[in-house]
Image (cartoon, rainbow, N blue to C red; front, side, top):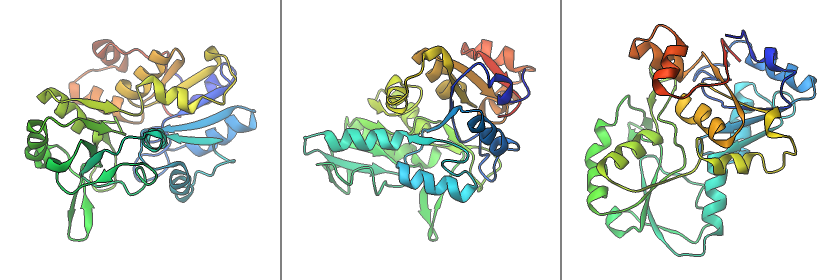
Length: 281
């Protein structure tokens, strides 16, 4: 196990970093992350933040700046699955009707020909927003999907496909100590019912094509760094680039929950093996 990303500085030219669990823990920057990102860029390395978040680029850059991560200082570019979804929706010519499940997106459909409707019965497809419920003036997160299961079963009976623009199963937010459910958990539940889901984001290759479209670097000089085996590491491996797992996020927590004594054993059980393991970014 390596101490941090600087141990790999000379092996790679492009570092693709997940955000949650790698640079940010849900409340604050992960210790050392900002300094190590600056060191990579000072060494003339390219640092790309690749998020399964549904914010578009400008919003994501603003959010990162508020957290203390500045474009041009800590990273070169941020790419989100929201940007990929927006591009896809905007280029479609079909006048489809869609229903928004959970917390709705205000931006992804801004330039699409789609029409939003207020009930799933009117819709051609359902967009999975953040699985939250609006209560007492705020959007509330949950640790499981129980509050949403009845609506999902209803949607399934209607035979509607779901669109998932954030395949992450869980994420850390400041409301709870434990990770809360995210859109990927909704999508997995729906697929388990037998429903159809279309995904944007890691681990699917299209998001890597999208993120690296302007990068003229051999694949063996690109490293994907993440905290989650099922999205970050599987995505990088499937795309044919090297991967590094950080011990500061979801995989470490899952290892402990499952009762494994080492991350190597846990990766073997899941059958997703990173090329490197880092104590921290």
